[in-house]
Length: 610
Image 1: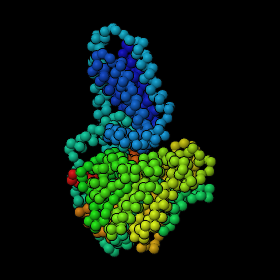
Image 2: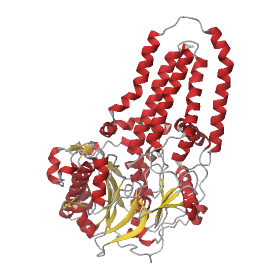
Image 3: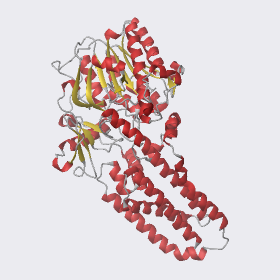
Image 4: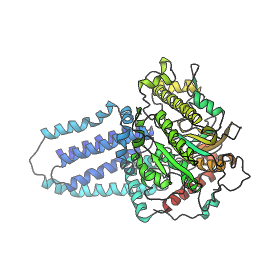
């Protein structure tokens, strides 16, 4: 009887925690989700009951602890990544060491209440130890256990089959239950790793409207031909700080000045997957979609990826990338050779001088990088440099001595995430201003095409105070899918007197095609597929997103679309007014095209030789 009680109370405890998790992730309590979670827990507990004749209660305690930790990890993972934890994500646990400050910022001591029942049951177990034999009892209830186990497994398999067609990961997890979703995802990933991905068919590119860079009659074709190229990737840098004024002070005065002399795109969005910053580096240099739940850098080992550095190597450019963290972080020691960079500079070069969070400050990154580029230029060589800034990383903490360089925010921003974010972006702006000055001092500014973009979002307002501050700054509500994922993309061409803001929609996958057009480099789409578009010569676009948004999400010229369980129960959101409309009144042509585009990109990536 005691053992049955312990079985039931453990199951009930896990279901209560699972309900808290589901409300935290999905903002709702769903009976069916809870039912399938109950099936999962029941199967696990029954297997323990059947496999262990002794120490059952001890095993229940261990399982309770492990599953509780899994529930808590899923909640915290979602808070940080806005995505659902999977077994593939757990493989990147070694990367957590570098973001411990961010994890601590998200941790709440109230989470420890999740373990109170484990402590209580441990004491209960200790004081109710029994030495009586339960062999007869076990024999009598064995058929009941087997029947219950069969019913739970059958129900789960039927539910998995029923929801097989759901593309939206959130809706699928909600329908299956978190743990069933995690198990199904794990099984699918392993199945694909064994049988392989579908073969890539170049003929599909034409049907999807994928174009190369071939016609010299295009706008701005070749205006930067023969120039040096610097691509600056800013950490966690969103669009909204540009031009923002707080109590009469510009948050980004140097970027604002640079913007006024450049070409920029006002509807430009992040498209990264699990690899975050390293995924952004990959997309910008290849125009290939990331695969989503796995960092590209961990799948790319020994591959030779057609890329911007490889194209420029063939044109006698020296190609380099600069990053102040250890090159092993997110497996960049595999990423950079696969992309064809001649050389990379990491922590071993910058020596943690003027340390902020992960490595040397953005000031040091920019100064030392330009010194190296000046040496290349002095030899008469052209260079392509990818500079990866890091100082504005979450949780946006700066050394005290940096505050003399940044905006002085009013007291109402004290202690808020919005305030810390604006200070971090203000420092990045200051460092970028130093970069421009150094380029001018070294005589490189007038012969260099400079591209700048943000790698991913930084701000996710959660408190009432942060939400109110964002409403004050923007004059409206901060949109969690449009404002949050909108990042800057700015291009400065010294030989081009024109400046202006383009309103057409774009994403990080469009960076490489746009740069190729400016550099006057012809690319045949059959020999080198580009899954993005040249933004100067594109009147319409389809910008796909996954991982941070459900698969099937896209931005076009007018709307953001996000699917539900199917296209029909998804929603369209106006990019300007943020008005929400049901999908039933729209065509699903773009949605179907996007899914084919993602499949084609994945097939192409996996087809690349190792």
